[in-house]
Length: 139
Image (cartoon, rainbow, N blue to C red; front, top):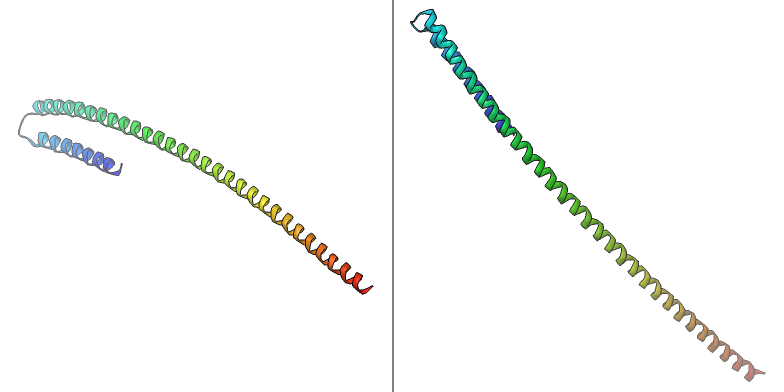
């Protein structure tokens, strides 16, 4: 964008410089005032037409650049929405995997706790059986 602005400034300077140069050349040329005024009028009309053409061209380019910018913004918005959707899917999948892992860990914990309780009961029963056998022998 900056190079387009610089190009526009250069072109404007070129046109203005050309107009000033042409006006000075006409004013300093050895001819009658009537001829000079006619030449100035003719040249000013030519430069006016040239300026209008250039203005139309610049407007057209600006419009094209605006449309391209809008297209790029729309494309970026589409990509952003796609990325957001992928992120949502990934987050949902991760959450589901986490739930499954937590459920599996809980089940394993329950099984381990049940086994530990069962072993504890068996140990208590064995100890009680040994103690009752010791009591019977003593008594």
